[in-house]
Image 1 (tube, each protein chain N blue to C red):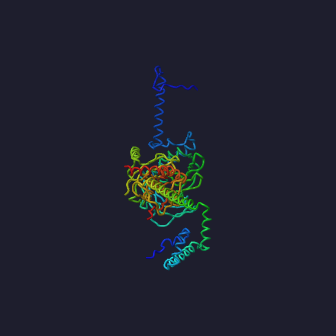
Image 2: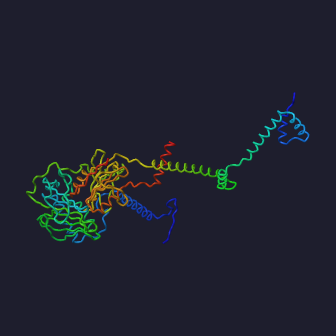
Image 3: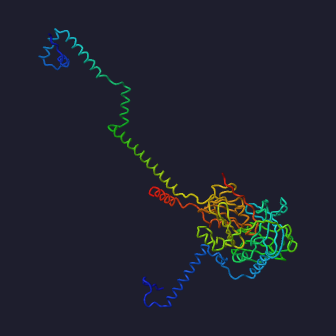
Length: 150
Length: 383
């Protein structure tokens, strides 16, 4: 039974074999079609992988990324984002504290007010005017009688 | 002057008994004087005008003559019979006029009633006016004060607060009259009285404000004096409230928290207090006068609605009150659980002084309110 090269093919293509090992591998390839086909497939795959690794990004994408890098400044983009987030959080906390304080002050102010005591009264000015005239002996004119506005 | 200090533990041995009596007397006199001053300040002493009368020297002959005539007029108001038509004009707000029929029998009270004939049969020839209905169309039974507000009590107050003199002669309703002038101690005219030459009955009265502007003119347009004067006397006229409050009753009400002041600014002395009932509780009528002006203050428990139709809200020295336009002789407001209604026959300046002197709710200040609110909230949280 013929033994094929197996992993030694990969080592051959990657140039990792010693001279003696490469001579023995090449001697086997000369008389084994299967290993020659496998070696050709591995070389093709390696070329394609290499070509993918050298692919460049599109120019537009490159310029956008460079612009972003310039805007955030050299070397600190992560710190500034964190600081902005902290400022936003403090603003929220301050707004909450101020709102709560105003609410508490309003509650205290309202609670400090007194409800009018006694009944709601509309003075009987007509009657009072009569008593005033009787008392003084002078005849004053009649003022308009007050009526509550609904 | 030498200053000496004494032991705080009391009298030292050897203190002069004479000096001790002197000190004790001074302390007692001081306490009594303080008590009188406090009582006056709280309105517990409402006696005569002397408590607040401006300093005045002995009356001059002219003053004595004028006061003699006014005293005779006060007596005439009660002792003779008369009937007539009386017109009242109040000018501050543009000249409102009311007309009433007047009757009086000796020893009784004067009666007034709106004339049965509609319209204005009489008019002031020289003053703009509009005719308005007089109060108590069913008739009024005037109190102690007689016609034109003349009474012995008011004459005594007038003597204490004004300078009176006889000025000359005139004529009212076809009758000859003597004129008595009343001037302020500062100098300006306060009032003129026309007194019937034959009987001294007051026939006309003009009042002036502090700027010598005429503010009221009340006079008989027609009058019949003596026998035969009484005809068509009205029946069922409205009476003064029967419950007269004595000083002790006023003191009791004050102790219960009623704000019932004694004297008021403008040399206004409390001349009477009455009480009546209303659907919302009792109302107290306090009447003040300086002998010429009369101001009635009605006090009752409760509070006013937020707005009253037909009245306007005005500010008097920073206090917001309701006023009836255009005369500003009637004000109403509530404060401290009481409603005050002031009705005056007085110069606007005097009325303004009275309104300002009475209690007002102008807020205890935001700091006090916050402190009160904080206490209240804490009491709710930590009962």
